[in-house]
Image (cartoon, rainbow, N blue to C red; front, side, top):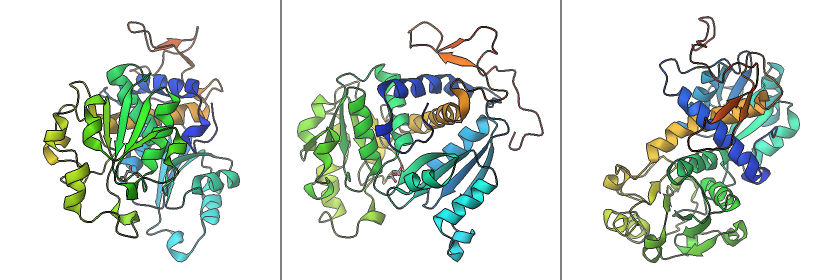
Length: 348
Ligand code: MLT
């Protein structure tokens, strides 16, 4: 398994399938009364967030805690960064404290890559500038696969502020890698000129596209990154690109509505649309924990190099009726329900 997760480009199809298959086992852990397994007991995961985040930070924190890792949450307010400490010194300090994995979110594209050259810990990109958000794309793939069971030929539209969206880039790369077709839809000012290089189509006409879609993926309008006026008014934007009830009626029956959150209800998505059963936005959040558990588990040694106390597992291909995970002879069953965490483990 890869050491760092910086971009979807690093992953092969097999890697993606393996991450999603492993996440399926971890999703089950989240349905138990005791949502915890000892796989990463004694390992340390640092959440290094230089940009605001609610769901991604909490999701990584929960993922690491459910694997029994020790978790340190570091945000720039109240830290030495506020006194001018550089990313390098912050990283080296955390490394000196024994971090095994560093999850980083940063406003600069490429910051996770730079960090990975300074520290021996595994680095996971939790969103870097307008570049990538690979764990979001993987949880989106997981959610899509839950519904369609494959990606081949699935038609996804990613709608809205593509220019400022790291989610759009990662999801485009991920869906096309897995055999899906992606169309980026939005006003010309919000589609980056390099977008066709991601292996996608571009359209400015959402209404024409709706009847052919399997997934309608709505992006947040990222006001905080817009340094100029990209559309005349919010009302105009919503009229042309907002996902309204009338537009949903033009989608085929099984098509999914997705959004990475946080949502601007009434701007890119109508409030009643966000609450429809086919809007799987809260499923995306739930699945994010399982996918991040899978990544931490595989990257910190769950891939053959045994982590002390971790189950030794081999992930089976997705047989509809068979178990998601095969247990190697003589090994513990994966994630046994009885493996409650001892009281002394923090956060238990
Ligand atoms: C991100 O961090 O990129 C989010 O998940 C999507 C957004 O902020 O709109």
